[in-house]
Length: 320
Image (cartoon, rainbow, N blue to C red):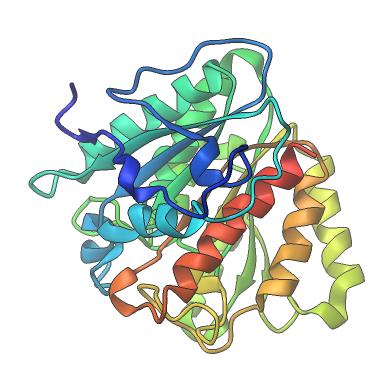
């Protein structure tokens, strides 16, 4: 057993009892030691937690994200299960960080994501710091490399997360810069909901240099839907597969107070879910994550509930 992996705890999945499978806690099967289900035919979801906050610490954020995966599981278990009847859901536990060795955690996450895709799962990752995106995307790139398929990354976030490394090391603010540096022309990035107040001019310059695309929060609003839809559809049409990352700090802190970097001016849930539906309808979403939940600052689990709803909704739309 890998010391950086923790087996799932079935007690984290709970909810209303039913004689049939009607809720996520009933549909979810806990699997130990990363023994992936290799059965063919039926659709599958593979849940993996990232119980880590070293990247947040390096980025001077508020600590507490290590508790996020179980907090999301607790809220997701009671949600009604609307995936196809033959769809199987597997919880593969959490990747942790030991002795500040973020890089080893990232390596295990990348390897696990690749294996999940090879065994025909839809990976859904719960974080944890947004440094998860670097490891998550690397796993997808490794999987797609033999096919030559073009990967597009869509990040719903108030931050570009294109910050420079700290002392040569990655952190929760640098994942997409690391990917841009590593994959060059194969790095295709669209960031939705960028807020100028938390992204200095230098980051907009970095976004230009890395050929990133984005929409600032002032334009990422319902009254501008036709323009937003056109930009997203153009990006979707130019890609073969999509990795969707949802940073909970992209939401307004009125709906998501429990994050590492709260913002009062983020997007509203009903608008975000409209975007999720548009992206999911493309049938190109290959993997997804929800990140930056910080239960230490949550209120009545409202941010964890919203994170769980994001994961459930996207999975439901992907399989519909």
